[in-house]
Length: 170
Image 1: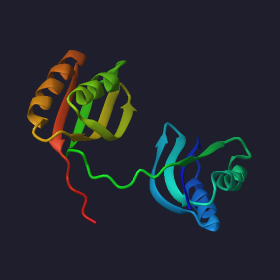
Image 2 (image 1 turned 90 degrees about the horizontal axis):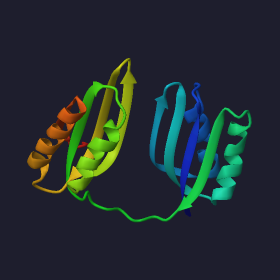
Image 3 (image 1 turned 90 degrees about the vertical axis):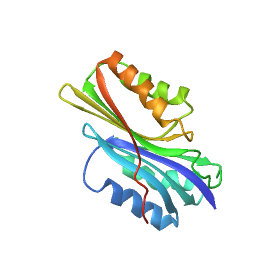
Image 4 (image 1 turned 45 degrees about the vertical axis):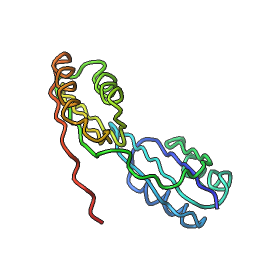
């Protein structure tokens, strides 16, 4: 079996998730990880699945993109194996007046402290910009990082919080 990374991007409409999932199911591809969202009227999906060759999946998805409203890409990837979280899970939330460089600056502070962004979303509502990032931090670094984030946020004119993430209960 092949491990594939698939992206689907285009103007949002009802049924995109069902259409893509049905194509994959018909091919015997097992969807393992995915993220899907709407961004200002556009749909974006990234998923990992295990199934047939990339060319076969790409050909099966082609009819969904025939009207040029969607773009689907398929790429074979190498399975890296399951890895345990490298650090302690935290959530960083930033909000304030929209301005250039908020994401770049705040994530650089995280990275410089050894943190890893594992999920990030942003939203612009009027002039308010909101960032929510799930991050893994090296053990014992959260307090000092929170101070550095607060200083950087003050320079940007935004507010920041850093809190432990709630564990997923399955």
